[in-house]
Image 1 (tube, rainbow, N blue to C red):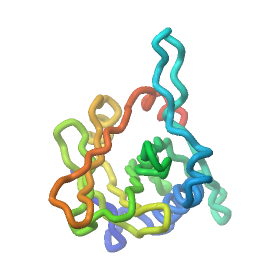
Image 2: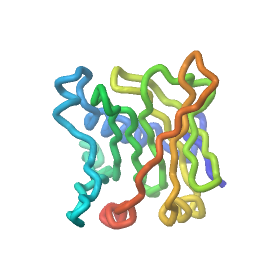
Image 3: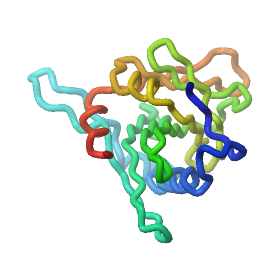
Image 4: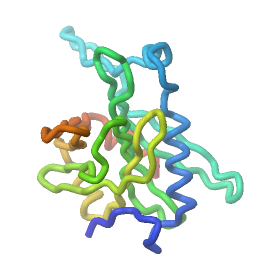
Length: 187
């Protein structure tokens, strides 16, 4: 069974979750058009068969107290016109038990009580929203082994949000090309 991460549940330490959230915030671009314009969205393969730019990135940080490394594989998506970060989708393992977790930073202006969702094929997983910053709002969901395997094999992963003041959801498709290759580097 997939379990959302919540501060009241004993299976995930708050330290691990906060460390993961801190790592994502370190990677978040500074607000403003100039900073966002420096980081371009990944390119598609060229018509001539050229290689695409890397769409998954690995970022790590070390917990100074425990000296343990925490790493996530992440994909950023940007709004075409403003070049602002629209979605950061990250996957990694937290705590000493290496529990699989999805972290997603969604844009500001999302109706949080509607619980943004991660859809893996036909399975919807509600994100437990943790907090918002000027870069966006961070949500997380812990995965069980079966859902982790489904994510690793999936060709259709989407993050769905409901903007404030509307009844029409916005879906951010996550490009899974190269995900498994990058994920092997986390283990």
